Image (cartoon, rainbow, N blue to C red; front, side, top):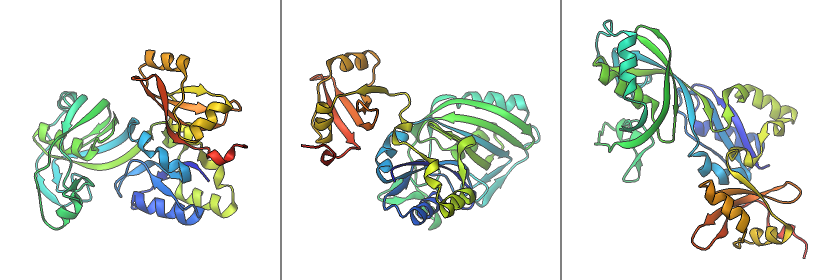
Length: 305
């Protein structure tokens, strides 16, 4: 079984817990997830099965949307409600106008410092392991793209926002940094991932419903095709001769397709057979005008000699 499940991760389970559950229920050997969610967070978690695990890297660049509740006046060591409170201040003087002005500086390409309680590695060890051992190290800031922030609700001391962002953005850090900007402290109280690339929470399956689907044998109904994650890529339809070359990992020449893709400034494409079957991913080499086979999902042995 190859493809992707759009799972609504519940609070209290790690992303790894969900992967382990799917692996046990499906009996599929290769299972992985894209975009780790903290144990306290809920929402969209794409879980890839079989050959679907080979496209996780493409999901990494997809935009994400979150709904977050940030409690002002409190700072914790983890930047969220699961941590230990290290400082408290009075946020009663903060108004909606203050929050709106403060959030302006977090739109666009910003610099973020990862929390100590994160999976970012330092000399091979995740930061959260060091944090649990009482070790704090200086972290380098890194770029994060925030496309939009919308205030959904403000009931002091909690502000609810919707954030659309790119890869590597820490909403916990955003909550902390907002608190620093407002000079009252802030911590992430609740987080829901609303979407991840083409996957939306409205279509995500809950764990109880997924377990029922496994028991009754209709769980493949919830599997998305591998090429679902590439809706904005151009599609190339190739004949059987080039299918065979691609299946063997050989580069292929598609002059017309290459010219089209260069105009659209895209160096990757979905490749399909004449019957509509998804073959794999091609990457364009502008130096020689050839399409290099990147990933293949139809083995060479499937073609008759």
